[in-house]
Image (cartoon, rainbow, N blue to C red; front, side):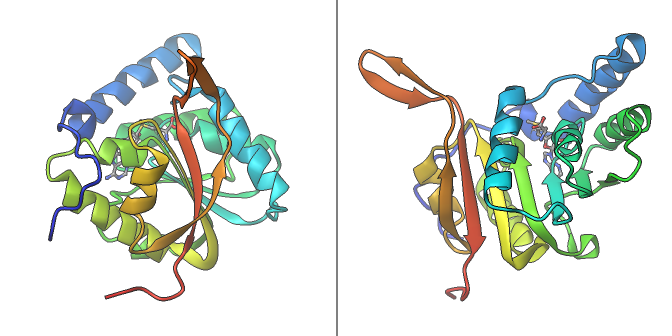
Length: 222
Ligand SMILES: C[S@@+](CC[C@H](N)C(=O)[O-])C[C@H]1O[C@@H](n2cnc3c(N)ncnc32)[C@H](O)[C@@H]1O
């Protein structure tokens, strides 16, 4: 496959399964000790923003929503609070799913489905969804060895997981709007940039994260 000129990051431990297994093992211990559900990547406000935006699109409360690389499942618990009812979370770390399932039982949210799944393997058995949500997972994949090929496999798998008129919503701290749009351009068109917090320094406006909603391309170029 020919290398394109999107940013290539140096591989690091955040791109390995062993890193996440050990992180969630620690988080399970902390949760059992003091009830702390653990890290919410990019802060709770990043979840609220996405949910507000979904509400504005008149997304049906029973739309099927999958959280890709769900971690502790916090996004799905927020969605459930916002009365979304058809929720699935997947992660390749068994420990992440163990943590999310424990929290779901304690928060009396047994209707949320959590499954162990590697998003770089065969995902067909998961079915198809109206909304695919990613917060920080594409970022982690971008830090793996052979990230260029893995990002491509991930993108094709998300395409297969999404219903034809569905929404793919991604929040990233490692890639800019331009880089995300380019990375997904074989399979998705940019639909809308979801406003995120900006900061100003020396007269320049910057962002710490980028959230974008993509829609499937109707025809794929060969
Ligand atoms: C930065 S964390 C984000 C967790 C969660 N989405 C959040 O916002 O709090 C990245 C997550 O992606 C998961 N992940 C990384 N590569 C994956 C893969 N190939 N398949 C499934 N999950 C993966 C990790 O286990 C981890 O839970």
